[in-house]
Image 1: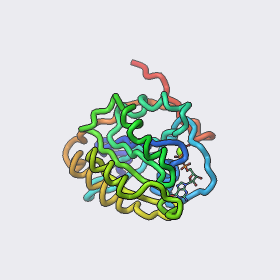
Image 2: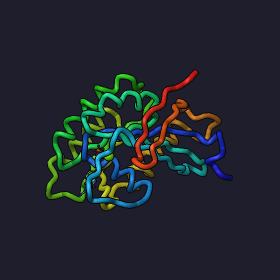
Image 3: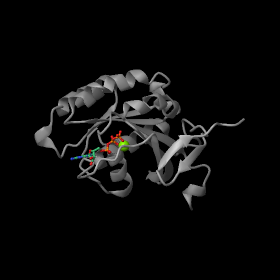
Image 4: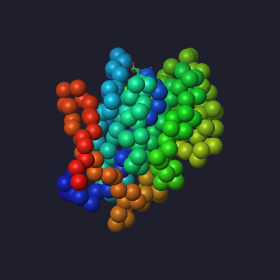
Length: 209
Ligand code: GTP
Ligand code: MG
């Protein structure tokens, strides 16, 4: 059965948030394609991708929204987060400010019902251990205080990915949203997008009716 054509395949909207340069796009690339690029290419506006995964023999469709960390795009974030099911909030373990800013990111999420969303705090770039300035325990503490999933990873080497996605996130989707039931807990709103393939960026299109 081709689950892409199955309208009953549960869909979950997953959004990457976090400061510029922390590695959001790199985590997405590692997750989707198992690749890594050294050169920094800032995300402009928003990138959208999707992926089907199986949780206990049930297909689920992940809609993956990779946001831009640059300040100038910050005002667009509420538009993308308002119907999110899963938020990956990323910091860079070699950049203290990116960790300190996690609280600001959460504060800005005024349109989110925290009880209905799965949050993951992700400390990226653990391959750069000699440059580490955020201890693992600090990240763990932040995760525990908010009752969020916490995982350190390296988008460069792939370390921590199996734990983040398969052991933690997919397990949480299974228990919280119960995708094998008749209906997903939360439906993703039907937002229409213009996709500019050349620049790989998406700009929201006005919703009619
Ligand atoms: P914006 O799109 O501007 O918000 O940045 P981003 O968060 O998407 O960061 P991006 O994935 O573009 O990565 C920024 C830089 O960090 C790039 O040069 C990546 O190669 C590098 N990088 C990302 N993840 C890792 C990692 O795990 N280890 C190392 N060493 N470098 C990484
Ligand atoms: Mg990016």
